[in-house]
Amino acid sequence: MPQTETPGTEAAPGPRLRWWTELPLILLVYGCYSAGRLLARGDVDSAVDHGLAILRVEKLLYLNAEHPLNRLFTREPWLGVPADFWYASLHYLVTPAVLIWLFRARTRHYRAARTWLMSSTFMGLIGFTLLPTCPPRLLSAGNGFVDTMAHYSSYGWWGGEASAPRGMGGMTNQYAAMPSLHVGWALWCGVMLWRLGGTRLTKVLGVAYPLLTALVVMGTANHYFLDAAAGVLVMGIGLLLAPRVMRAADLLRARLVPRPAPVASGTGSPVVSAGCQTSAGERIPRQRESPLDAAGGPALSPADAGEEAPAPAR
Image 1: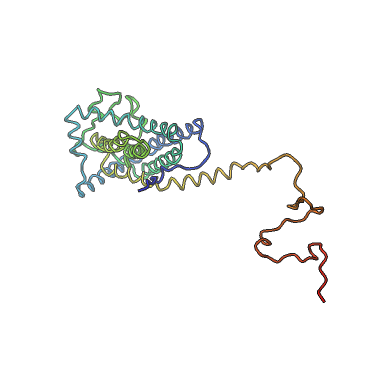
Image 2 (image 1 turned 30 degrees about the vertical axis):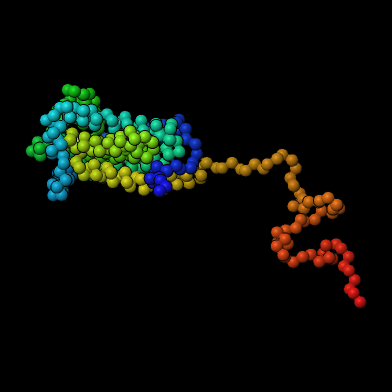
């Protein structure tokens, strides 16, 4: 059975990409991501209400996996500490590494993959703005969650405020929990590794990385299960939008950047014979036989051909 490309990962024709144009674009998107998380600081009371509402829905649907995972990570440091390091670092290391790998080794697929990631990220920013959500770790103690980042803060560089370095917790929006772009970006990395890695190891990593990330964000009480599901949904919508975004970018580029005028081949004088050529034995140039004539069209009369018509027989 022929292998088909996943939409959003297929090769996309376009101008040759250069690192000095790609890097500012990626930094711009990441800056918007960070600024969006910082600026979308909705009302704290509303964020808490949204978090409690998500928790109630999960309990109603028997999807509340956060509590047992959080208790396990809190009770077992050999799980909790690596999970905190995972949450605080891999999100910002693995995704750029996969982007660089695609740019250098899978150039034909890079533009579509990058567009997919960026489109989904911007939709995540819309979610942060419209639905500020308090993560489980910031709910009151009566809800049964332990902030493992604060619990194990002596093991890492983070303090008691999110995954930011000590003293910089005020520079991040701690109520940007819905959707979970930790899970969304991990899913994007997993798809890239699975589809384009080419080895069994990369396929295993492509499956394991997003699954483990989903467990980590819930076990550390940074996200609800529905946050993780929303991250997957956002990536799915971004996957569908990516081809349209690329077409729109191509149309915009075509309007802003004029195409060079075609250059005629040769540097001699222009052809003035208009297709009329002479052949051996011809004294006067005449139009060569057209395809219509060759196909059985009306033939020229002898008079039209410049020949004397034969006299009629008597």
